[in-house]
Length: 493
Image (cartoon, rainbow, N blue to C red; front, side, top):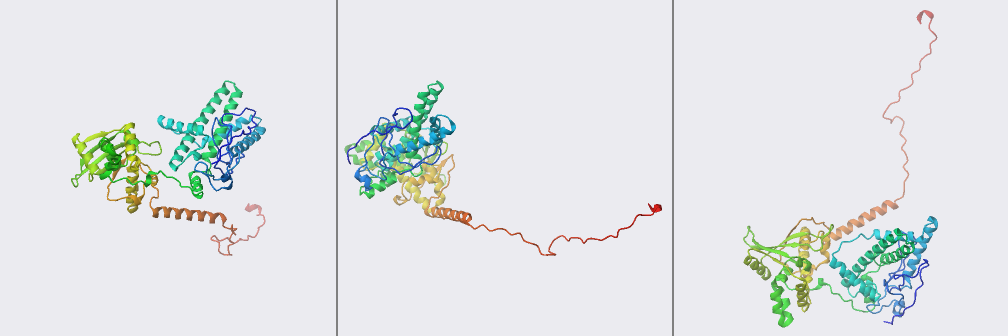
């Protein structure tokens, strides 16, 4: 990759000095877009957000030819000072509106900011998650890269993209609140500067994450493949963890410490292999109990789980999962429960989670690998019986059958396992099998074709029908002629 070169960008003609967010360089991934009005669609290029950055990166010969570069310099469509052009177009639109309204152009720029924020509802995340997002975002600012440029895998890109968008939204709202406080204190100059900074950051967020033709990891991965580079994938969907009967064996590959790790994490690993719960749910504590099925006298294990990814729209707050005692891990949990009076609670700490992940890493696995393995078994059952989709989604802690499509692969399933689940929230049904998806696509295509035919159908004038004589339902009475008479004689009046 050629060395980075920096140069000063032209400042916007806003009457203020260059702000921290003004000096930005060209992006390595972009498509030409423009937005000429405050609320209109934008066409531009992705930009880099680095508050302390005042230069841009010169295009490399590979980027100009579109042949691709290194993993951090892979082009999709290079453009010169793209984000600066986007800002100038939006500023021109705001100034045109200001000429008609005789108000400062920054008020119209702030309206653009509000239009962008209207598409970004505030998200409630935990303090730990917000701190994690801020750390990732600060690293991107320090490196002077966007989430797409820094990402090395798809999962890495998803994390950086979510962190960048969350922090940008929070910063834009904070800048607008500061501007409002300055305006109330009659510090007009400071209020305008803060408004402009919020406007610039919101425009960049709009270009990177909100536009329908934005660049994603798919574009970067395709460019890397075209350049002959290997796209690294660290997805846990392709991992093949052992079955529950041999789950503890995954820790024995760590050498002399394997036995100690197996003894330390046997219960946690059994829960992961049997129920496919999230590691964060294991941190909250899982209540395990054992009971006997009155129908056949066989033992079964019930795990009561407090959901981790839960809000108003998604997730199961509490769910009860049931599996039969038919393997080594289940028998171990059942024996432990019977020794402790029929029920006990398994709780872990962050240190336990890190230790277990390090032990599994030697086998190419992680705690999430077992969740994907359980999902693979559920997907294979859904392929044979689509009516089990809602129960499978409940078992995974979802409120839609569509969410399960992101986990596991039916081809990796071993079969023969039984699952039961119960939760408070109902599950929304979505096409999950190949036949259901094909039928849904066919229905959508039929609806679209019918709508197109209706729009393009020739308009035929409706000619009123003239009834034939005598075909009227009501007969018209014939007129009766009366002979007029003269005046009556005086004696007859």
